[in-house]
Length: 196
Image (cartoon, rainbow, N blue to C red; front, side, top):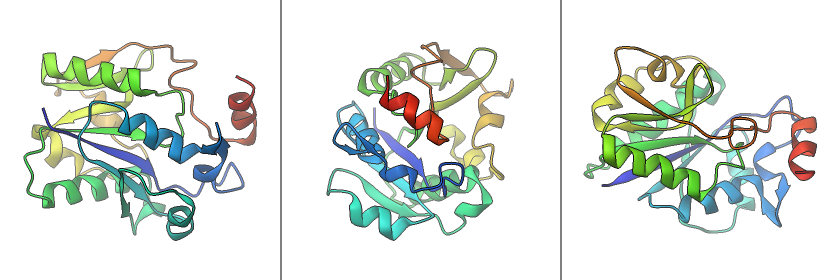
């Protein structure tokens, strides 16, 4: 099973007031931490979609097993980063079975949770999403059959419409929503992370 990963890290982090991807965490940056969790998992190629501050972020990230992609339309919202990543993967002409999409600001999404999503996908071969209680979200795995739907996404909702559309078969993986899927959007969120 050949699963590529898209780490979405293109936002300007306006609520944070500084470059969120480079915030210190466990001796490295927040983005490097997420990349390390991905690289330790059962995935194949890993791609990180950057937008705002892309050159500066790349200059601060140590070389690792991830290819950086530039989303020129990052200010159009999260969906534009998904489109950028999926179109790039399609152009590779490799036999990619699925794409795992995750966010760069969810530091508790670790290797074990990523592998749990992958193992669920291997047994189901349908969309596998993270359960947020009464709705589905990312991290999520999208099989090749959904790629054309992904490249048509628009706005700042990311893939939520697909993940919560009854026309798609979606399997939800339940985790600790308060911790595993906790995302860093503000200085108070970051302080919570550091104090956890």
